[in-house]
Image 1: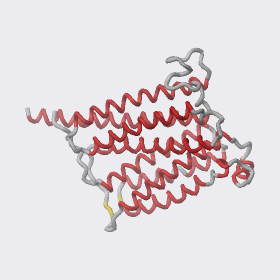
Image 2: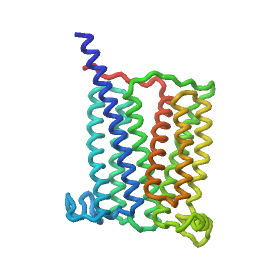
Image 3: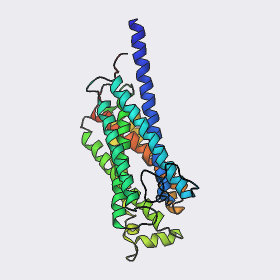
Length: 312
């Protein structure tokens, strides 16, 4: 009987970890679909109504922009259900004080703020062709919150997944470097969202015209700020490279190569004048890099975090 109970507890723990991975993967899908909403200027597809779409629960005779925006809202609703389920399951299956509990509560918090920020974008009209300063600020805050939400879910997954520690940290403490890398990555993400917004609002007819706009004093501020993203990416790359040298593990190598692989889609995004499919591909790579970096941060900051589950 004791053996059966232990096996049941272990199986439950594995099922919970798999469900957490599924919730995280679904959240990435929601983020990518949100990028499609922004890149296709479909944020106003449901009008200035939230959470209803043009005043209806199900839109009637929708146009393409409405389909894209309504799909994003629907996926967000499913993701919310997954996170709520994950929260209840985590509290049931783990002991008090387990770090996964704090991480999943943080996920709920950032999910609520994500919904509220999305509502502000819609209700204040910061969608479609709006080029106001308010939209620029809200876009940065919204994407930063998205990164924090993904980060909290990634921590939940990490603390719920049984594993063996394999990293070898150099004699010097790596905590400071890993947190610096996290901050620079958030900066990369925020500036990247502004660069993508500039590409959407002010599309360039050619590569030469786009480069000329970047340095033209008469160009909109949002366009002249596009250079900040590659500059932040260079700083972030240096931090990640130093971190990979200091923390020797497969996870740190994965983080480094995920960031290095972003160079190709980043350059292609510029050369191809930022088509929607390339923006989504670039964002997918960025999300995978961020998730891996958060997990590496957890491994360095909390190497002995408990992953045990409450026996059935």
